[in-house]
Length: 133
Image (tube, rainbow, N blue to C red):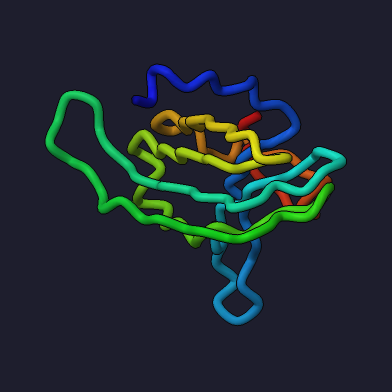
């Protein structure tokens, strides 16, 4: 059972919600990235994403993303995210392997945390965004 597995502490891995202005529409487009700031590759990376509202029945579908490898000191574009979802808790459950050992972490972007006052430049993706480490 999962409770019987000893998961090591996740360090050097972060999630970011970024924004980039569309050249044609001049509107922002928002993307979710997984950032590997480690000196080793992440292997067999599985990311489950979902959104929900505390205390109500509002919830999104669960999306699952997989990539075989995220190289050291790089990032992986997970998905596009719509601004309508910023009012929800946006949850990203990430699991990956390093040297055959499984790592697991849940990243939560709380309601309204993805807002203009929280955006800053994120070097790893060369865009502004909200970083969750």
